[in-house]
Length: 127
Image (cartoon, rainbow, N blue to C red):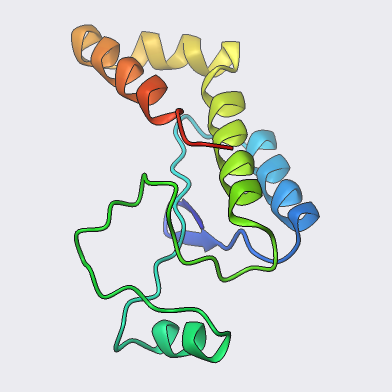
């Protein structure tokens, strides 16, 4: 899912639909982006939907959203979902215009350097 202001766009369905959503994001004038996989927790409506799909809902609230392990509610293989997410983030944040505005507008340049290091560390998701 991606959140744009208070709107939410679901990246779901086929890999082609996911790529179309990502292309829509690139055509926007956003300065930042977060791509997260929705997590169906046990005891929730989404958890019940996951069970009906034959998936096991999460009951561990400590599971981080940056991990490669997640409950995949699509027909697209998890590795491909992660590859689409990773490539989208890299393509988004390494866009020269966005990099310029980020560097110009970010209040603490030292914190920006730290965030860039964290960004590249998290890009080590397995494809």
